[in-house]
Image 1 (spheres, rainbow, N blue to C red):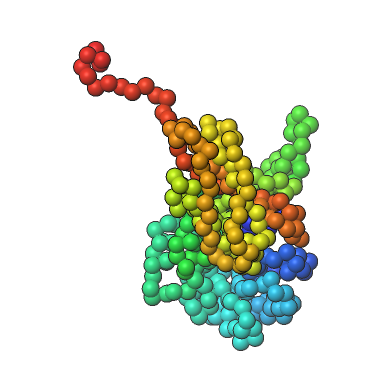
Image 2: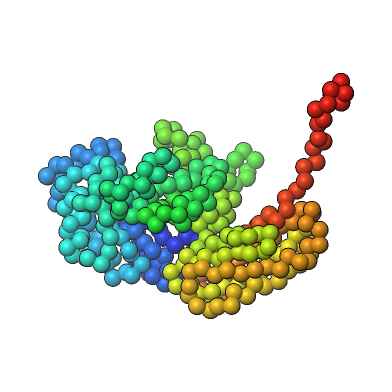
Length: 359
């Protein structure tokens, strides 16, 4: 439920299939799932996939995954595993799955396997230059869905909305999977007797992982008890499926873009608030004059109540659910937008360039 409330619409079960109950919940609440095979040979790279002795063991894990979970409509893609190099073992897995289940995608990231083993390009953490190259590559027009990106280490997720801009601008770029959802920490007690979320070393154990433990343990969107971090709010806004943009903000003209799969505007409510110097001078509801499931609708807000446009003026627009959903009650806030009509005037004194004033 919390994932849906934070505007997540897809989850990757890294790095193995999940509890059967998880798929039931995704079927019910409407989360798309990438179901991942239980294969990762991180420490030895592609040694196993290129060794015929391991071919049947890899194929068996892929077969078991598909046969067990195939009846869940939430699953949209089968993943061949994670960080295991690339070789004939993966090619065999991919094409057995395709022959058995032609209704879903097959994907794999490591070592850029190409279309023989992956129906999408899903590079991990590409630098912006590489991502732009992938978008522009006319020799390979497979859709781009990053298998991992936006790593939630420490104070992460700044400028996250830029990813959504790319998804809006380029059809071939279709988002990605944030690493990762929840901190893997346990209750620990400090010298003052206060409980906190601890990880490797916080219990004075003799042996801990030599890799920086907070990178691997405290890197979630939410804390161990599911409390959203500040970055979760940034992610929620950045990946909202209801996008509002200004067409002519001086005249109060805007456009709302519906990027949901099946949510109509009759299931949403929109309200606005006009602020002058931070004080609310007007509130109201926005009537989009349509109940249809369409993509883009324009609307206008009457700004005549702002008598003096030299003042600092902002318009806030909130998007909420207008009906109850299994994951949220009516009135749940999906997104909040703020548009600057007239920004603040600088309070810094103006410096004169005349010689007399500079002396």
